Length: 233
Image (cartoon, rainbow, N blue to C red):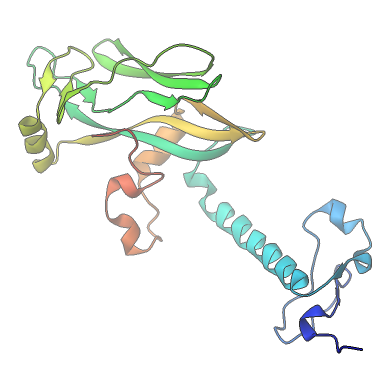
């Protein structure tokens, strides 16, 4: 009879709340992920080969995830029942038209989703000289508004339609007068992707910038915070 390979030895999961494991990795004993698992007799579970190790890794990875979320959740606000996926941004610039002078968005597209039956886009409106953004989602038909990008590096002001050419935008950027604005939030709700306008909490969190505890590489540019710039110039 062939000798059983060490990796084929069955590994039994110890009961919840026991002492530390005696294997060569000295890992704590396997514990259930939820109360429903705790109600079961874990001695009935037998792992073969690397299955037990894989189960250990998945358990401790979940612990790291939970602790990271506890530490960072305040910087990633969400609505009840949703899991945020991305925060979408657009660069902003001041309109050069003296009669306007409003903050306009340099978005290359207003589309959020072109999935059949789940069309979604950003709907810009002008109220009292300011661009207000709404999100239209879950549509079976319809079209996003035309992009304010009207040429190679040229944008039309969303408020008054005056052009912002490349030379003007480069000078504004060099002077540090370009801005960023959160335009929408993508999230998962019950396994389905949804899009919504940013809440006040989203905007406040976005304006805070990256946590001071992040490595220096994470502070390279403002657009690297959250999901980065999407649909921008």
